[in-house]
Amino acid sequence: MGKRSSIIKTLRDIAFDYSDAPVPDLAAMGRELGSALHARHDEVTQALGALRERRRGFERWMLAERGKPAASVLVMAWPPGYATPVHDHGGLWGLEATIAGALEVESFLKDGTAETLRSVGRTWLGPGDATWFEGVDDHAHRCRNLSRHDTALTLHVYGGDLAQYLAYEQPGPSGHWIARPRQSLIAGRLTA
Picture 1 (cartoon, one colour):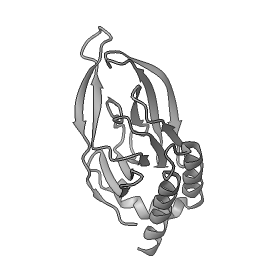
Picture 2 (spheres, rainbow, N blue to C red):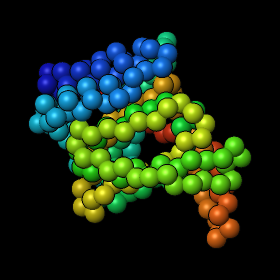
Picture 3 (cartoon, rainbow, N blue to C red):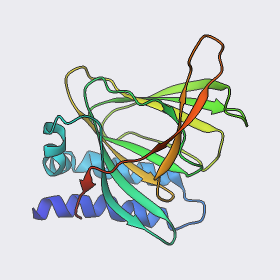
Picture 4 (cartoon, helix red, strand yellow):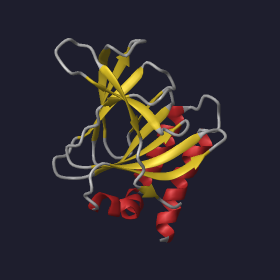
Protein backbone atom coordinates (compact mmCIF):
# COMPACT_ATOMS: atom_id res chain seq x y z
CA MET A 1 0.00 0.00 0.00
CA GLY A 2 2.88 2.40 0.70
CA LYS A 3 4.19 2.04 -2.85
CA ARG A 4 0.73 2.67 -4.27
CA SER A 5 0.40 5.86 -2.27
CA SER A 6 3.89 6.95 -3.27
CA ILE A 7 3.51 6.77 -7.07
CA ILE A 8 -0.10 7.93 -7.06
CA LYS A 9 0.83 10.88 -4.86
CA THR A 10 3.79 11.70 -7.14
CA LEU A 11 1.57 11.77 -10.24
CA ARG A 12 -1.03 13.89 -8.45
CA ASP A 13 1.60 16.33 -7.18
CA ILE A 14 3.16 16.78 -10.62
CA ALA A 15 -0.26 17.46 -12.15
CA PHE A 16 -1.18 19.98 -9.45
CA ASP A 17 2.22 21.71 -9.51
CA TYR A 18 1.97 22.37 -13.26
CA SER A 19 -1.72 23.29 -13.20
CA ASP A 20 -1.16 26.16 -10.73
CA ALA A 21 -0.59 28.67 -13.56
CA PRO A 22 -3.50 30.36 -15.37
CA VAL A 23 -2.08 28.94 -18.63
CA PRO A 24 -0.19 25.79 -17.61
CA ASP A 25 2.86 24.56 -19.50
CA LEU A 26 1.26 21.34 -20.71
CA ALA A 27 4.38 20.23 -22.59
CA ALA A 28 6.45 20.47 -19.39
CA MET A 29 3.73 18.67 -17.43
CA GLY A 30 3.67 15.92 -20.05
CA ARG A 31 7.47 15.54 -19.93
CA GLU A 32 7.56 15.30 -16.14
CA LEU A 33 4.62 12.89 -15.93
CA GLY A 34 6.18 10.79 -18.71
CA SER A 35 9.51 10.76 -16.91
CA ALA A 36 7.87 9.58 -13.67
CA LEU A 37 5.86 6.93 -15.53
CA HIS A 38 9.00 5.62 -17.27
CA ALA A 39 11.24 5.72 -14.18
CA ARG A 40 8.65 4.03 -11.96
CA HIS A 41 6.93 1.81 -14.52
CA ASP A 42 6.92 -1.33 -12.35
CA GLU A 43 5.62 0.57 -9.34
CA VAL A 44 2.78 2.27 -11.22
CA THR A 45 1.87 -0.99 -12.97
CA GLN A 46 1.69 -2.74 -9.60
CA ALA A 47 -0.24 0.12 -7.99
CA LEU A 48 -2.88 0.29 -10.71
CA GLY A 49 -2.77 -3.30 -11.98
CA ALA A 50 -6.14 -4.16 -10.44
CA LEU A 51 -7.81 -1.66 -12.79
CA ARG A 52 -6.43 -3.61 -15.77
CA GLU A 53 -7.83 -6.86 -14.39
CA ARG A 54 -11.36 -5.63 -13.60
CA ARG A 55 -12.71 -6.12 -17.13
CA ARG A 56 -15.79 -4.03 -16.45
CA GLY A 57 -15.71 -1.85 -19.54
CA PHE A 58 -14.50 1.72 -19.87
CA GLU A 59 -14.08 3.31 -16.44
CA ARG A 60 -13.01 6.71 -15.12
CA TRP A 61 -11.40 6.81 -11.65
CA MET A 62 -10.94 10.11 -9.79
CA LEU A 63 -7.43 10.46 -8.42
CA ALA A 64 -7.67 14.04 -7.15
CA GLU A 65 -9.47 17.32 -7.70
CA ARG A 66 -8.83 20.87 -6.64
CA GLY A 67 -11.03 23.97 -6.68
CA LYS A 68 -8.59 26.88 -7.06
CA PRO A 69 -7.06 26.86 -9.52
CA ALA A 70 -9.44 24.24 -10.84
CA ALA A 71 -7.90 20.92 -11.83
CA SER A 72 -8.86 17.26 -11.80
CA VAL A 73 -6.68 14.17 -12.19
CA LEU A 74 -8.19 10.87 -13.32
CA VAL A 75 -7.11 7.39 -14.34
CA MET A 76 -9.08 5.73 -17.13
CA ALA A 77 -9.29 2.03 -17.94
CA TRP A 78 -9.81 1.20 -21.64
CA PRO A 79 -11.07 -2.29 -22.51
CA PRO A 80 -9.50 -4.03 -25.52
CA GLY A 81 -10.46 -2.26 -28.76
CA TYR A 82 -12.60 0.34 -26.98
CA ALA A 83 -13.03 3.68 -28.76
CA THR A 84 -14.72 6.81 -27.47
CA PRO A 85 -17.08 8.76 -29.66
CA VAL A 86 -15.67 12.01 -31.02
CA HIS A 87 -16.04 14.38 -28.06
CA ASP A 88 -14.98 17.76 -26.73
CA HIS A 89 -13.92 18.76 -23.24
CA GLY A 90 -16.31 21.58 -22.45
CA GLY A 91 -13.64 24.22 -23.16
CA LEU A 92 -11.20 22.83 -20.57
CA TRP A 93 -7.50 22.31 -21.25
CA GLY A 94 -6.34 18.74 -20.82
CA LEU A 95 -3.47 16.30 -20.92
CA GLU A 96 -3.52 12.53 -21.44
CA ALA A 97 -0.59 10.25 -20.62
CA THR A 98 -0.49 6.51 -21.19
CA ILE A 99 0.30 4.41 -18.12
CA ALA A 100 -0.02 0.95 -19.70
CA GLY A 101 -0.92 -0.20 -23.20
CA ALA A 102 -1.21 1.93 -26.32
CA LEU A 103 -3.76 4.53 -27.37
CA GLU A 104 -4.57 6.24 -30.65
CA VAL A 105 -5.86 9.82 -30.39
CA GLU A 106 -7.49 11.35 -33.48
CA SER A 107 -7.92 15.13 -33.20
CA PHE A 108 -10.70 17.11 -34.87
CA LEU A 109 -11.25 20.80 -35.52
CA LYS A 110 -14.89 21.84 -35.21
CA ASP A 111 -16.53 24.91 -36.64
CA GLY A 112 -18.54 27.30 -34.49
CA THR A 113 -21.81 25.44 -34.99
CA ALA A 114 -20.25 21.97 -34.48
CA GLU A 115 -22.06 20.75 -37.60
CA THR A 116 -18.77 20.00 -39.30
CA LEU A 117 -15.71 18.36 -37.84
CA ARG A 118 -12.45 17.90 -39.72
CA SER A 119 -9.83 15.33 -38.73
CA VAL A 120 -6.50 17.13 -38.25
CA GLY A 121 -4.25 14.22 -37.33
CA ARG A 122 -3.60 11.18 -35.21
CA THR A 123 -1.21 10.59 -32.34
CA TRP A 124 -0.16 7.20 -31.01
CA LEU A 125 0.77 6.94 -27.34
CA GLY A 126 2.72 4.19 -25.60
CA PRO A 127 3.60 3.98 -21.89
CA GLY A 128 4.85 7.36 -20.63
CA ASP A 129 3.81 9.25 -23.79
CA ALA A 130 1.50 12.27 -23.47
CA THR A 131 -0.60 14.52 -25.65
CA TRP A 132 -2.50 17.65 -24.66
CA PHE A 133 -4.95 20.28 -25.85
CA GLU A 134 -5.55 23.90 -24.96
CA GLY A 135 -8.80 25.11 -23.39
CA VAL A 136 -10.47 26.10 -26.65
CA ASP A 137 -13.94 25.45 -27.99
CA ASP A 138 -12.91 24.18 -31.43
CA HIS A 139 -11.05 21.03 -30.29
CA ALA A 140 -12.52 17.54 -30.19
CA HIS A 141 -10.97 14.09 -30.35
CA ARG A 142 -11.60 10.36 -30.36
CA CYS A 143 -9.41 7.90 -28.43
CA ARG A 144 -9.00 4.17 -29.01
CA ASN A 145 -7.23 1.35 -27.20
CA LEU A 146 -5.04 -0.23 -29.87
CA SER A 147 -4.94 -3.67 -28.23
CA ARG A 148 -7.46 -6.36 -29.07
CA HIS A 149 -6.52 -8.27 -25.89
CA ASP A 150 -5.33 -5.98 -23.08
CA THR A 151 -6.84 -3.16 -21.05
CA ALA A 152 -4.97 0.14 -21.38
CA LEU A 153 -4.62 2.68 -18.56
CA THR A 154 -4.23 6.43 -19.00
CA LEU A 155 -3.75 9.42 -16.71
CA HIS A 156 -5.82 12.54 -17.50
CA VAL A 157 -5.38 16.03 -16.11
CA TYR A 158 -8.06 18.66 -16.83
CA GLY A 159 -8.32 22.36 -16.03
CA GLY A 160 -11.49 21.80 -14.02
CA ASP A 161 -14.21 19.20 -13.55
CA LEU A 162 -15.18 17.53 -16.80
CA ALA A 163 -18.67 16.67 -15.59
CA GLN A 164 -20.36 17.44 -18.92
CA TYR A 165 -19.19 17.48 -22.50
CA LEU A 166 -20.51 17.01 -26.03
CA ALA A 167 -20.20 13.80 -28.04
CA TYR A 168 -20.57 14.02 -31.81
CA GLU A 169 -22.30 11.57 -34.13
CA GLN A 170 -22.49 11.48 -37.91
CA PRO A 171 -25.91 9.99 -38.70
CA GLY A 172 -25.43 9.81 -42.45
CA PRO A 173 -23.19 10.57 -45.39
CA SER A 174 -23.99 14.32 -45.38
CA GLY A 175 -20.83 15.19 -43.45
CA HIS A 176 -22.84 16.98 -40.75
CA TRP A 177 -22.36 16.05 -37.13
CA ILE A 178 -24.90 16.08 -34.32
CA ALA A 179 -23.74 17.15 -30.86
CA ARG A 180 -25.27 15.30 -27.92
CA PRO A 181 -24.69 16.29 -24.29
CA ARG A 182 -23.05 13.64 -22.13
CA GLN A 183 -22.18 13.34 -18.47
CA SER A 184 -18.93 11.90 -17.17
CA LEU A 185 -19.42 9.00 -14.81
CA ILE A 186 -16.86 8.21 -12.14
CA ALA A 187 -16.41 4.53 -11.21
CA GLY A 188 -14.71 5.39 -7.93
CA ARG A 189 -11.91 7.24 -6.21
CA LEU A 190 -8.25 6.29 -5.95
CA THR A 191 -6.33 7.36 -2.87
CA ALA A 192 -2.98 9.07 -2.99
